[in-house]
Image (tube, rainbow, N blue to C red; front, side, top):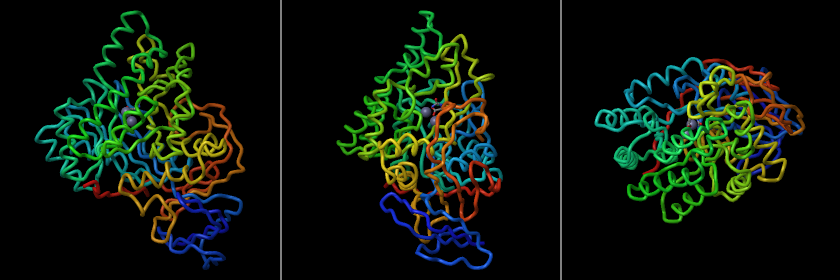
Length: 460
Ligand code: URP
Ligand code: ZN
Ligand code: ZN
């Protein structure tokens, strides 16, 4: 099986040139001008289009038992949505409940993906308690190809861990060379503020961001950074949303703390006024940390441009507006937290970032693919275009014009957080390891072909 992509403008994190890309089986084998296709090769004309490395989403929820319900996608729907939107690899959060066994949970999450996913995948292993059994099992999970843990400083009583567990998790990660990814919000402050707001009769979705203002996130980041400083562990802050939290992370970095910083596409393009929409519509936009004041958008775009913020993810967590979000109709603390965005991240990075001059094409590739691959031990197999790399490629049409709508999306959820938004460009042909998996907004790949990507810890 061979594939030739001709005349595209190849964009990597640090180069830009017109050439042909030849792929044999699953791998890029040649990049040059005027390559000829052997008989039987599939040829894609990319003239006038960009060719990007496949995008990698480092923060996705597919199977997520959470707040009394389950997020809506499966690997069948989620991987199709990812591919149509230009994401060829996703890293899912494996999130056991505190009572659950870590190894059994890892097997459960794996069983959701193997034989179903059309895109490649890996997991961050959630550490939602830390005891002797968990420690032994985490060592085994790392041997099985996991090089990052996930911890929550929020969600008291559900996923959240206490400070002793936090310290021991970071010590273990330091020993194993594993990166610890973390949801940073002070859970005590959240719990107290929720209690006060509800007692004052403030129950609507617009109260969600009042319960967790920027200082709550900044305190969570500062807390993690203190523990990282004392243990020497490599950390990665997921879904950073605001200036105050960024200031804490950068101050820690300047002290020598090892920390990667992720923001989300929704923080870059939405603000808290969406969660204040009347008639409960704001519930569509309830997530944690919450959407912020619009002033933070420039802070985050500038942070990406200047290299302070390393990656852009989705934290894709889809819950239906009709049937699931209303669990919190009379109490905002019961609204399932999360926004669907797996399908839109790449196209919005282009339309709202590159087209408006906030970031350049190389930054788009870096924060959406290359830096993710480097951060999570997938580079250079993933995250770039070079001989020997997996043939995960996105032919991107900058002349496409269209509109985002729930009616045409592949994510299995009944609304779009970006309904009616215009797109100026989109992923037009997407390949996974040499096979075309999406074309012009339609899935054309093979369910079950997605591979589990074994990763080796590198943060010693
Ligand atoms: O609101 C969010 N972010 N939902 C998904 C779970 C998490 O905190 O990542
Ligand atoms: Zn989170
Ligand atoms: Zn998440």
